[in-house]
Structures are given as C-alpha cells and as structure tokens.
View 1: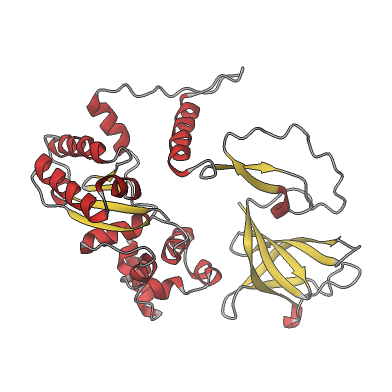
View 2: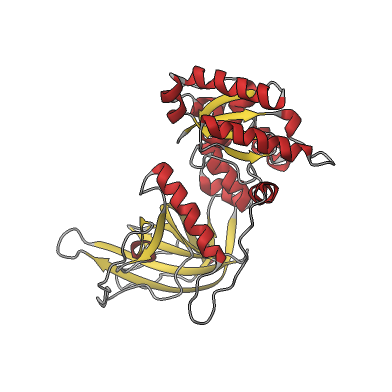
Length: 359
C-alpha cells in the first residue's frame, strides 16, 4: 500500500452556517497543492497526500511534516494533527495519534487498535460478546465465519481489518469534490444519457478522466477491467487486463465441451471456502464415478453451528480435465439456500467447496 501523510484539522471538520468552513478548506487545499499536486480533501477537516514524492523533494518525511505544519498554520491558523501510515485507514489512525509509522509497522499498528475504529457500534458490541476487542482479533476470523454472522458491509470492514482494503467505505465524502468545483466557479458537466446511436455520456468522460489520473499516479497496471476468455468454469473465463489495452481481435470460438451453463455466478472466489453438504439422515452427499449424487442434498453447513436448508438444487455437472496428464475430476452443483442466497458448490476429491455466489 502507498504511504500517505494524513492531515487532520479538527476546526474544519464541521460545517459553518455562512460557508466559511468550505472556503477555508478550499484555500488550504490549494496551498497544499503547492507542496504536492496529488493532495486530496478526503472529507471536511481531513486531507491526504502521498509522501514518497514530496519526501524526495524536501529531503525526508520529517521535512515534509514541517512544511505541511507550517502551511496549515499560515493558511487557517490552526495546529494540525499529522500522521503517516500505509493506506488511508492507517494514515488517519496515525494522524489521530500524531505518530509516523515506519514502513512495515502499519499492520501491527492497525491490529492493535480497538474494534471501535471500524466505525460500527453494533459490530464492536457483538465483537466484545464474542471476546473480540481489537482489530487484529477480528481480522483473525476466517472470512466464512464473518459472512455467516454479519452482513456484507461487515465483510468489507473485515477486509480492511485484514489489510486487504486500504480504507473504510465511509471514510470519504463523495459529494465534496462537486461542492469544491462549484465554489471555484467551475461548470459541472451535464448528465447525459447514451443515445440510440452510441454517443458518449458525461459519466463516461468523468470515468475516463479518473482512470487516466489513477494510471498516471500508480502505473499502467493500477486500473484493470474484466474481459471474457475461453474456459469451462466461471473462474476460468474472467480475466483482468490493464485499462486502455487493445482488445483481442480473435474471438475464442472453441467448443469447450463440459462448459458450465448459464447463469454464471456474479462473484467467484479466488480462495474457495470449505463446506459440508448433507442429505436425509445427516448423510454426507458424494458424487460417484458416474457423476451422480448418492443422495438428495438437504442442507449445507458453512460451520458446525449454522446449517442452511436447501430449497432447490441443480446438477451435478461433472468435469474431467487434463486426462492426458494429471486428471482433475470435479462436479458442480447449483444450490438455493433457505436464506434466499444462490451459490455454486464444487466437489473435488470427496470434499465440497463454495466457489461462486449468484446475485
């Protein structure tokens, strides 16, 4: 993750009736642009800038901190809270504590924080009941266990706790950029719909401009798009390519015998989750050599304490690949659970795994 210098100015964190807060925030943002043109106003009272480039120019991170502190004092007259960490989440926590984390220390620092820093009071309350008091203890839970007990938003927070995401979903104010543009007197682009003849809309232009900015900052592989390729299984057919790269002219017209039919799951798991599939009488469901089930599935267990009844299923669809070398035999099963969630299960070597989730 990129090391960020996060600047907290508490007096600018709340709106004022006369609009002075927004004007002061814009003035400070313009002044910080002089030090680093990639400075962002994350939300009112919170700024962030990548520290790597400015530290080379000013002669080290501490020199950048001194320059930023002097700038904030000169422009708004307040003492800022400064911190440096890897990613926006750790950077803001470091700014609250006024500490500079050395490279590699952000993970330990993040894990030592209280569960309250994730911003969900209900998550912190349930976590304490389960004996989870720190971000690290919450991060140590398996993703499947978190998905069983909490909702999708909590799963995102779990990825932040594990360091897989660099910022919280609610850490930024998405409307702040438009307000600053209006304050500068810049005309906002009009929203347009794409017409019948394929003309481009304003949303496409904004998305391309944002992608160009990210690619200039982080390199050509920072922005990727999904494209379809040949394959039998959903996880084989989707691949990520750099945004803006030329599309392949050759269309994969291979028949792919044994290809799993539609619909395809909206989400495929890079790391499948082990599950247990049970039939009547708590009998383990298996796929025999002929590709048939030994019994009708009635429940799916993601853990020993949370079975889900099977309302409907389709399959199995057996697949045998690389018969000329190391043969790989798999069978897929589409299942609708009593929770309303539709999933794709895979049986291989006598074990079941969750490999896909349908919307």
